Image 1 (tube, helix red, strand yellow):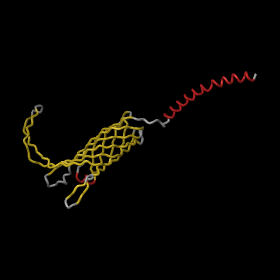
Image 2 (cartoon, helix red, strand yellow):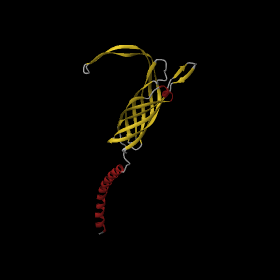
Image 3 (cartoon, one colour):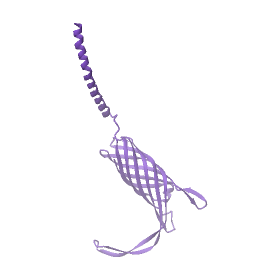
Image 4 (tube, helix red, strand yellow):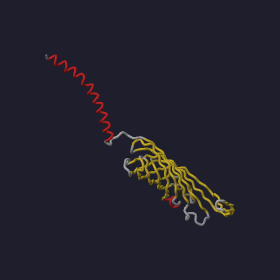
Length: 240
């Protein structure tokens, strides 16, 4: 009688583990889903880009010589996870030489700066409608200065049939006295504020400080000075 009771129980025991294992796997999947939905999620990866433009403020020695300029910014990168990514950027800006620098010389000029940089980007609150981020990294900076002088005037014919106007205008003619350029290493760091407009597409405003390690220049009197540069561009645009 005892054997008859044990055999059915043993057969039942042999059938239970398979079902239990299936339920365990299903439960594990459910737990994983719960793990994701509760905020401790797997990293999200995708490409990033930004495009913008704005004002650029030379500061320190550069600010003593150049007016506030304007420029534009392009960037492409990759987001390893929601809060961390890497961004390669290009920036171009132009500046006038301050009027009091070349007073009485009859000389005018312009300054242009371009750089390419590789930056780490940390999004502090990536899922918020209003967010902010930190950005910093090294770059290579190309700066050039052109000095020009008024060489005279020229008569240039102008005719626009849509305006019913034809005449000869007298325009100033300038000549380039000299052009100097330098390619140097630099570092930058800043902070940006973003506003979500559609999914991961956001408006942004960003301010960043740049320090350029300039080359040495011999000046009258036997002294040597470094043409270091400091700039703070403030850019507005869209980023993804």
